[in-house]
Image (cartoon, rainbow, N blue to C red; front, side, top):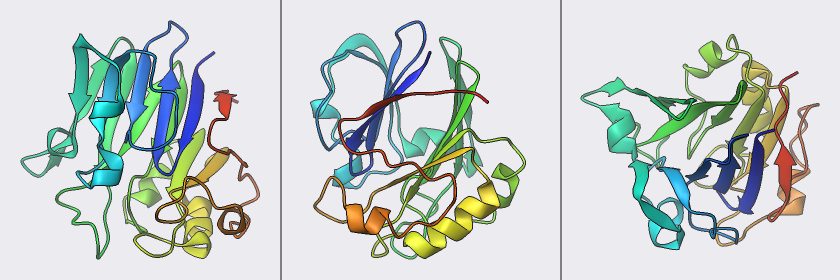
Amino acid sequence: MAKLLYQGHASLRLTTNSGKVIYVDPFAGEGYEPKADLVLITHEHYDHNDVSRVSMSPRTIIIRAADALANGSYQDFEYFGVKIKGVPAGNAKHDPKECVGYLIEIDGVKVYVAGDTDYMPYMERLGRMGIDYALLPIDGIFNMGPEEATRVANIIKPKHLIPYHMHPGTLFDMKQDMRVTYDKAMLVKPGMEIELEHE
């Protein structure tokens, strides 16, 4: 079964059934020892793109926002059976031309990693895609806050919501997390690894 390790802030590690390792927005926390097969970067802010923390091999593939949004078009990728789609992200503090989220299909499970963003019209389309897990920022300073994230979750309708990117300079903020009222929100703290289920 595929797994997701939440490392804190906006950093996470996905591991496929076959042992392929995917890091998203490396920067925070621990758990960077397994060699990366793939690294996904939503945008180039320092707290999302510290690839120096990642153990890499000569065959590690890095996909940056400029790759996922090339010539004004969102790109699709597929490596070792994992499907990746760049999707819109952004707000007043994050230029939508330089930011993406990712829709990742891993062992039949659809994971939406929003990146740094507020509500985007594209999220209406995500609501028709059968998202299993959505990770939405909730800091309310650089991105949507808990109330807007709750509203967005009700649009996307994920089977599981993992709030993340909770407060600048911290891995996790319990008080902020508890302000999200979506009925399928999960409490996932830094260092917790969960098995990804397709229901």
